[in-house]
Length: 356
Image (cartoon, rainbow, N blue to C red; front, side, top):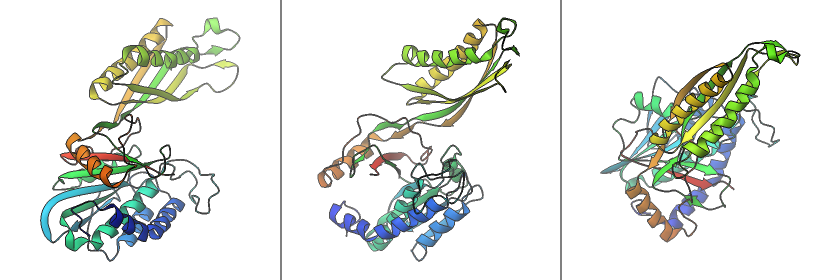
């Protein structure tokens, strides 16, 4: 096996040989999901899976993430492969044999699979270490779900010096089985949190004229934000604004004083990101003012746009296409998000892989 070239048959065989262990690891992680930056059980499982391999392990003070480094006998480039490890704050009701044993936490985004795949890649590449011209860094990252885990790992110096290229992958249940896909340019959106508080005046439900009901104002803001997207932002450089939660009031016959809205805004460029931020604040404040109310708007910056480098992805896709007929570029960028790369390497690429 020559790891400097892509041999689909050989690497498929290596994957099949490690499939049972990968499934076991994935299900073990799925059973005990953990949230945020501190994932001690998940990290312990990763270390156990990597035990005995010729890897240097790096850990930092800010998270439970780790970087495992495989150095080949010959000098060459350094490539980073990354998998995220944290779960989502959901309660699982799938009834699977390996369902979550932690109420309020579930691997609903596939990170358990990412960890198992990355550990499998570490084993396969370790087996071919004597033919490895360079270094591979395996980044097991916590805190992807809004916790900026990659940023903390970078600040802790776990990826110093930076690799020549970094690669991340995300499984996707809405692609045909066996398909892998990527593209040069923006691939995953930035994601920023929206918080809006509408202040009216409370009163009795029988006398709305003597109150200033914030609820219809909040509803009008939601609709106006959708008009902002369709009328102020180009379809060629899109944005998605979603208000996912509205809270107001305590009972059925009292008009409340406040209404609160939570949501996200996602964009594929910094230009549209700035336009959307400005528009959200202007729309919320002006709609509220039109009704004699007030609106406070807070937008919390989240992950940046994930951008794949054109020369790197073009070369890789061309080579894979010769060996794997199902490889293809996606029709469009995705509004899913990831903090996988930040500025971790001069060339970086993200992928989607079918999970069905």
